[in-house]
Image 1 (spheres, helix red, strand yellow):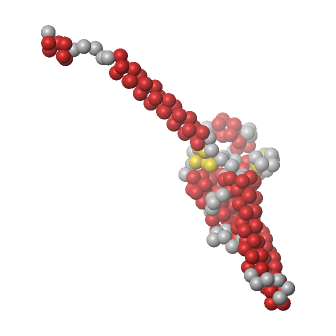
Image 2 (cartoon, helix red, strand yellow):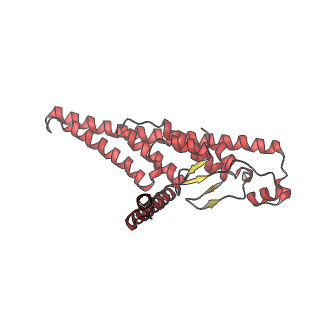
Length: 247
């Protein structure tokens, strides 16, 4: 009887209540983690790089009759080279425009600094005024460059991690839009002109990828363009989008 009283007996109400509380706490914690993860994953999109061999699915994908999809492979090969040439020209023009604008802003800064240095030599202003002007200009240029990332946060940084994600099948949303290209190019101009320790090498890779992705698809979400009438409809898929975005 003594052993039964010592070893037996049911669970106390207190222990059962504690287990229930712990279980509810773990459930709420798991749900909170799941909700947080879902909110983070909204910014990403999985891409499909495997084209379907079904003619019906391909016709639906390209929104064209089956007979029009029976194209010559040599024709598509020529179109791909044409598209590559257009992308290269667009990327080069973007680089030239960035360099031109950067050099002009730097020249404005240098000319203004030289003017104030001459004023210091003439005694028309106090010593150190030129230095303060240069610091103010560099600060202003850097602040303007940072403002572009407020309007388009994905434009911040070099853009290389976003391109690596794209090549591996994960699209960071808004990273391939014209608005992102404009924000990144403008930000680079003011950041370099402001003397920040940055360059245009990384941003140009991102800019070229945006040019390739946009031109290969023949459409723009930012401006609402959709050129389905072009000859490049065969490239409107994730696989070709990745191929034309490769730096």
